Length: 137
Image (cartoon, rainbow, N blue to C red; front, side, top):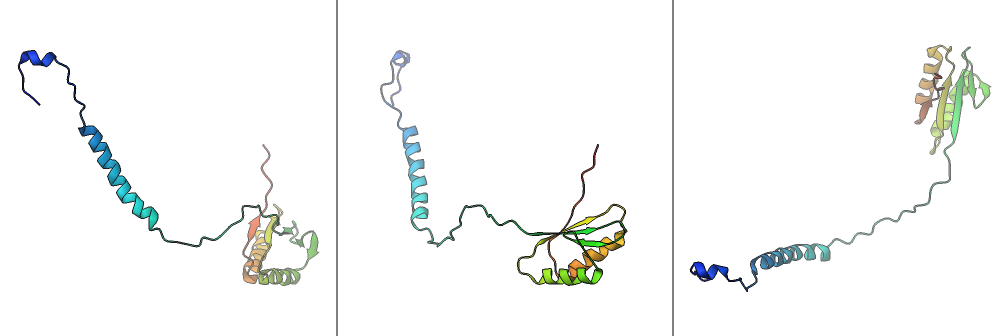
């Protein structure tokens, strides 16, 4: 760089400023120095293989209906309280349990629904759901 007089300022600078280029190259060099060892020295892991095919087996469901008079129905078959307890215990012992869907009539006493839920819980049934009809506008 030269310090000139007023007359020299009209001349065009004919040298390329190398400072920004050197700065960019140093930043890239630092990035490569940091990332290359990480990519080379990774831990070898034997990852599990998973198939992406959808499961075709649908879960079994048991429909436990409770009528307005308090009668239990196991998949449309009328059963007694003792039979309900026995069937729930058999279902609770299974490894792959079916879903228990409880359908209670709107006029049934809540006590009957609570008894069925307690029997299912005591038997070890893990998947319990309630089925309702949607409200019509």
